[in-house]
Length: 408
Image 1 (cartoon, helix red, strand yellow):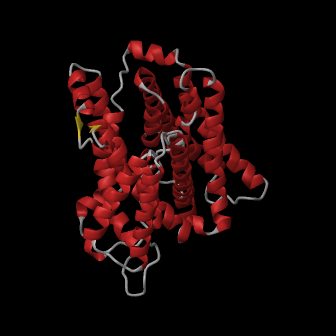
Image 2: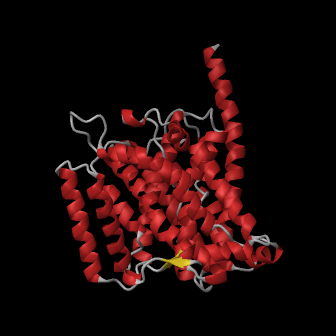
Image 3: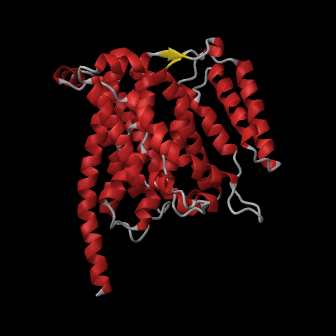
């Protein structure tokens, strides 16, 4: 789900930061994420498995405010809040000045994203209905991991029209919002009104400081940590703190500014999100057994099957079908340069669940059931990536040939 829009202005102080620019590319972000996942799978399915679990389950932090967490939980609840902060910045930018600020141009990716969430959820609920944990696990296949999806598009769809990437990026923004709502609604446990009120007041303070053009990190960093602690203590999943602060960050630049606070923060934090936060989360979340016995167990687990079908089949039907209906009914407009075969490839890429799907699997299930669901997410994401890549390579050749003929 981590996205980098290269069309946005970049602060001059960061333009020469080559390593940061390197990490901002979707291809590199996807490769780092893939490497972390492969390492986790290797360790979890080798003699190092006990060592891996010992690191993941090692607890640290103060017991006050329920902050004595395992390293895996710190990655899920703490580090991932940074990822969601970047997602919130991107969502705010798209809603205010980006693709989603224009109602007509936004309709197709919005409808596609909604279809890509509803159909997988319905399929997963229908297939898993009655199985242990299915009452919440239906939400696992609603998410699309844009880091992997854009990475696959960059690697195998270099000749695809720019409008295809814009559509996928816009769809992912709406998908992010849907995933945020799902996490906030389904996984709030034992709500503390006092802590929630404290979080709201701290967020209001953040908004006020933004309006007053305060820029000091010595104010914002402690404030952000305080918001995270308050949200975590309230019982709402702590990653929502990141989203809230991202949405409250100012997007429009002042005349004397080279870049807005949103642009500056996204430019600085996106490499850390792509190069550290998401890979570390993936390392601790993706270490699941995938031996013969585990695969047999997945094949006998209706929830795991529901996750695979929801991501691979549900996303394809939901995104492509809702887009087709929207265009035929005249409530959405498909870019002229993007063919329906291209849309099928993009819809297939929506089946790459990964980051948020793994998070929801962790939140909705426990123990062996969670491990099987996470393995199902990995299997489904691999299938969706390979099928989409095959279609993108074929479509890319056609676009390349068409461009060569037009130039001749």
